[in-house]
Length: 122
Length: 108
Image (cartoon, rainbow over all chains, first blue to last red; front, side, top):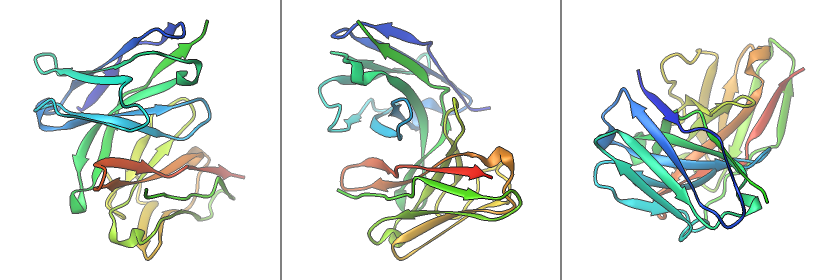
């Protein structure tokens, strides 16, 4: 069965960086894109961007451009996201999700990781 | 940029029908997907391509999309349906998803 398992909760000081992993199984990793989504406590879902796990091509939301880096390891079917220059407003749950195409080439997210809580505090 | 609007909350009595709206300019020509998110959990896809259900999602969940409004309908609402519901479309101009602000469903 399809699974996306994320790394555990992290605590960082302002200005530091954090890397979150998303280990996948049960599907052809290189045949899909992995989307990253942020959710601050009590807030809505905020898309951060995606990585095509096959080609490695990335696309970042303008809100995170320059501070976020997506990578992947095809030998381990794992995607990674690094967030740098952390600030208190980055305290949130971070989710990875498997993309698939629907009608009109509209992407949807049919399976999600369990989320990783990143706390940024001095 | 394209914006999806959702009411912050909807309340219905158990056993009744809940309708959760997602507004957007000419959203009827787009494909809309819906997610359910319970407290402390990841979102779950409940309806895709306006009205299709992933396997394992009860038939009580259905969707429609026309004009400027897409609607998620939950029939015979149960206490276990209490959650936040988000609509989503794909913005082909930016090649990124757009999420609505979410609607919290309460079963009174």
